[in-house]
Image 1 (cartoon, rainbow, N blue to C red):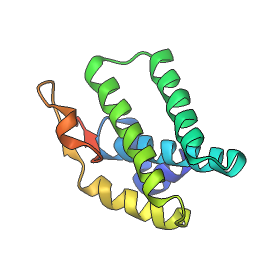
Image 2: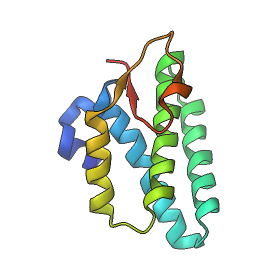
Image 3: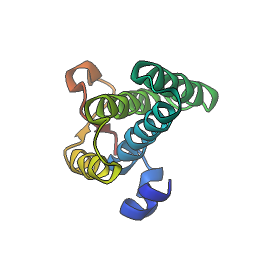
Length: 122
């Protein structure tokens, strides 16, 4: 949250690009921290998915925002797998760049068309 607030203020609480950044960053960081403990990349990303899926299920949201969150969570885990050996600051810079390229979606959007791209509603 602190990193998202540093770069986007309170905007990351809305369903815009800053929120996409927060979800992707959250998953990247969980996977990175889990790997430091488990030393197993697959286990670390599976744990990040499990924890964040639980969060999305436990704190109900409307259908499209939930789909958006789950999608951006997966983007974060993908970024972790692609950049596991990179410095955290470098990955944050990459995520910020991706935030600027986030795709606006609506109810008719097929999220599978935007695999590994951040998406937002607002």
